[in-house]
Length: 238
Image 1 (cartoon, rainbow, N blue to C red):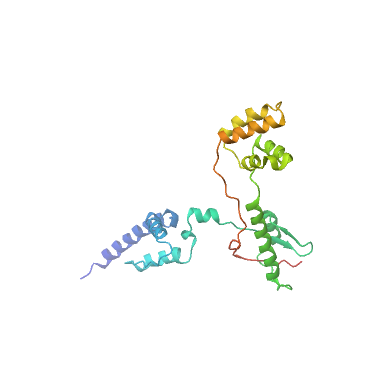
Image 2: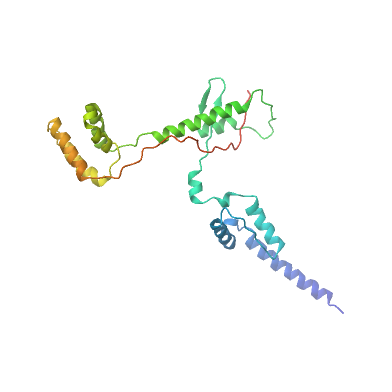
């Protein structure tokens, strides 16, 4: 004979214990799961290769699929995250202007949940292409933008530009940002501007010879722009 009451009592206690365990672990997020993070670390080392994961329990495999299969964020390394950049753009059809002020864009697209969806009466892809070209143009400009120079190096470059081709070697040298340890010596030299033009040029050439720097390759315009992925677009009709 089975002691039913005793079995029910034990089962009830087991349920209470399991509820207590569940309550302790239900707040644990994937990023706090040490075993999952260890697995992710190994998978990142194998990035680009096909991997099969075997598991004993079905619930464990469902958990892994739910996090690894549907969410690709875990694949991104810190370098990937640093390289990735989101662009928020708003194209005003009336003024033909593009705004990249994120707060302004959010304010414009903000709406209530119950607001009905309206079909657009214009081709959004033409505007998307314009915005894409706008972003690429800005990226190209940023790539070719001259580096910011500290004082007095920026003053020296301005002065050399006035003198023209006879100091082209100096202009090429001083157009590259110098390390701070060089700038200290340069400030002393530049503070003594009572020297004649030729004497100052000679002093600057001596400085160049005594303070060598590694030549910097000039940026080139890439034949192909960076890959841009449209995450979403919204057309506003007033």
